[in-house]
Amino acid sequence: MKKKVILVTGASAGMGKAFAEELLKDGHTVYGAARRVEKMEDIGKLGVKILAMDVTNEAEMIDGIETIIKTEGRIDVLINNAGFGSYGAIEDVPLSDARYQLEVNVFGAARLIQLVLPYMRERRTGTIINISSIGGKFAAPLGGWYHSSKFALEAMSDSLRNEVKQFGINVVVIEPGGIKSEWSGIAADNLLKVSARGAYASLANKFANMLTQTVDAKIPGPMVIVNLVRKAITSKKPKTRYHGGYMASLLLFLRKLLSDRAFDGLISSQMK
Image (cartoon, rainbow, N blue to C red):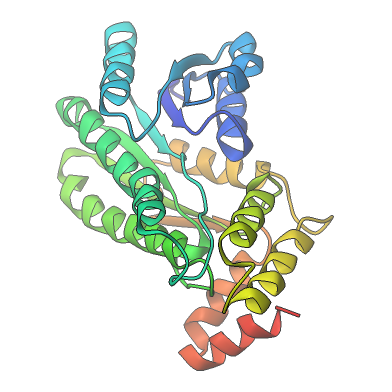
C-alpha cells in the first residue's frame, strides 16, 4: 500500500482522533488539525503532526495547507471531519447559531477543499473524504440546522465528485450512524439549553432522553468508521458513499422504503 499524506480535521476528539491515530499506525504521514491543540498532545507524541486550525478561520486554514505543502510537497487525502451538532427547535435557535453550524460543517469543509484541489489537480490524484451522517439523508425534529448542514455537505460532495473526476480525484461521503463519542451528550445539553422551556419543552426533553439513552453497549466505537475510511483511501475505485454504526443500515433502508409520514411516525415512536 502506498503511504499517503493525510490531513484530518476535528482530530482533537472522537472519530477524528481515531482516524489520525489509526492511519498513523498504517504508516501514513498524518496531520491532525483542530482548535483544541492541547487535546491532541497524546496523538502528537505518537507521531501525528499537529496543526492549530479553526475551520472558520481563513488564515489558519491557509497556513495549515501551506505548512503541509512546504513540508511534504503534496496532500493525498483530505478528511473533512470537523463538525458539531447544534440542536433546538427551528423557532428557538438564534440565526447566529444556525449560521455558525453551517460555517463549521459546510463552509469550513468547502474552503479546505478549495485550498487542496489545486495541488491534487496538479498531480492528477487525490481523495477527499467528507464525514457526513445518516442525518444527511433524513431529518429528525429539533435537529433542523444540523441536518441542513449534512444535507448540504452531501449535495456539495455529489457536485464536486462530478467536477473533479476528470482529474483523477475521488470524492467519498461517509455516513456514520450511532458511534460512541461525546457527541450525543453535547447535542442533548445544547438542545435542553435552547428548547427545554417554552412551546417545545416536552418534545425537547423526550428527544434529549433518546439521545443520551442510545449511549450504551449497543453503540460501537469509532473503529467501525475508521475501517470505512481505510477502504476509501486504499481502494482504486472507492464507493461514492459508505455507512456504518448503530442503526445506520436499517434507518437508511427504512428512509427509502417508507413515505415521509410513515418515517415521521417511526421517529416519533422512539421519543417516550
